[in-house]
Length: 420
Image: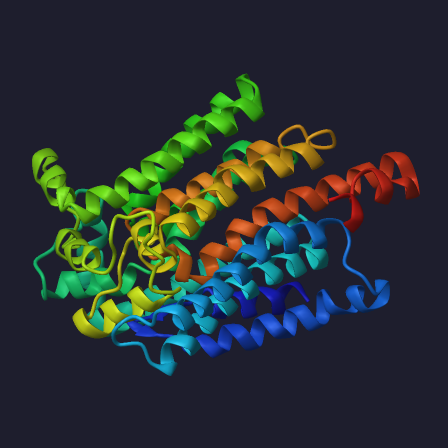
């Protein structure tokens, strides 16, 4: 079963192969198969959803449903220019991707427990290596060697050049950015494996990260690592409330910067190379207004419209979500993830796992940091890994409590639906 899981997830994690996008329906089929095998039987047996299942449904699936419903309301009240029925299917597809990634991670945890983390790392490795082999077959080994030796110094190759095309094909954003979750896990949260085992998996992950080379990932890992260290030394609730609130303010300030066209000024001032994002963000800024009455264009509408008109997606989940959800729903979205979820975890699970709040908040923080200049909300592997780290460590804690107090663990660790 382990080998089947690794193969299936390696396919699901493969967003591009040699520059060709893998059909999304394949991920849906694989997710449904895993859910039917692992999650559905337990739900049918119990005839109700309780414990961690209910917690995930309430905290992680509910906002996706609310986003879908709000989008439908927007399109009933005021349809944006260019709206067609394909926007509805695109929105539903985007929501399904989030729902499947969340529930598949939950099912994988139920099937393999904490080992699902290691199996998923192997799946990511196979996915990236397979793409690498395909790219070498297309571009040649000599060009690949040249890219690998130069990537650490610069990935800003001339547009349209062979090195640029190879780098674009190797830069599989989905699996590459997802490795950040696992790197943080093996550095900070893996308390059981020997150093030799942790180093082995960290080496695998670093190889994957280097091949896909995303500067965003390394910056996000460093920033999240600092927060983890701080949270281990001070009151978790206070840190979550403070950093979560400040981060939310920064997110809105970022939206303002994009809208006012200040992003290009800042980038030029510090001399950073953001690979054409200044132009993309200028286009993005035309889709929204800075007003408390702004109701948004609907989930996925802006991303779809930009790609169809310019050939580029938004590459900015933060500003895109403001443009698609509207002002007030945008702040609710920030509050839900940056404050409500980690504080709920801290309240419900901290007495059984002293790092429950740290684990959840660090995963959310890393995810949101990738949202600043990427399309992470669209990718299955990133969203799956975001959930897997959290659920695996929670379920792993459940087993420890079970061993120590016997059958009473269901009443003390996995909280029933009524108490949440």
